Image (cartoon, one colour):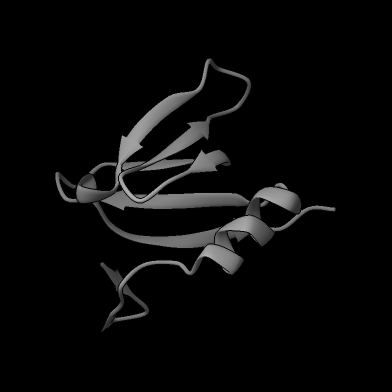
Amino acid sequence: MFVGGQEHKGPSVAEMQRLIREQAKVEFHLVNGDKLAGKIRWFDEHAFSLVIDGQDPMTVLRQAVMSYRVVSETK
């Protein structure tokens, strides 16, 4: 996974928990060139559950994610 132009192993568990708790909007850049932006509901070592603008949750496999960035943080 690449973040900020540097190779990265992905977000830490603590960072993911913070993003969920703060209901931050996160943009994932996928290996196929697509982008998905939404709020993370849960995560594990294989996938993220993402809610995009009130739609039903979708599961995104970690292997499909090239990078991510926080779009906005809300509290």
